[in-house]
Length: 184
Image 1 (spheres, rainbow, N blue to C red):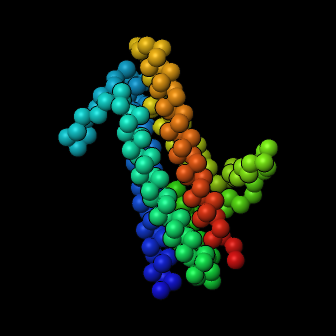
Image 2 (image 1 turned 120 degrees about the vertical axis):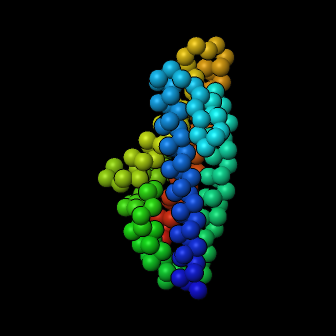
Image 3 (image 1 turned 30 degrees about the vertical axis):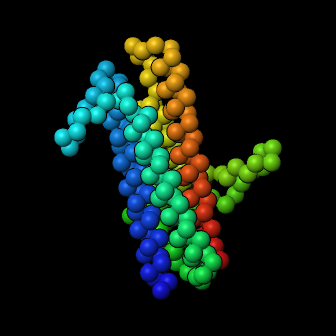
């Protein structure tokens, strides 16, 4: 039964990994289009406009929230019912070929800032740089600064900040939760 639960956990992690890769890739395409002065592109027979990047990334955020909930539920199940399998689950994820999990360094160290725990990301952890890069790409994909009114600039700046922060909190939540598997 424990192996089934660990496999289920890896499947949940795979969904998160694919979502984050797709989102970062799409954000990268939008940023490159903006830099080239274009705002539209077509993929899989669907026309995309960077004007609606905030909507697309809001949908991605909803999916990230749901997948994080499922993933964290699987982790909680392992911690509560199969504590002897924690390290095996951790090693399965961090030793896998999943982009956002391979080589992940446990994030259990924190600093206390005015009563709020801020978990420390290790600079040697490749997922630290992936997370920062992805967040920056999403932020840049959403904001609009060229040939637009100050109201649109401000509203997209607010939307980009909210969406990026929301996903940062979601990702931080599941990374800290999965880090609990790293030790007995």
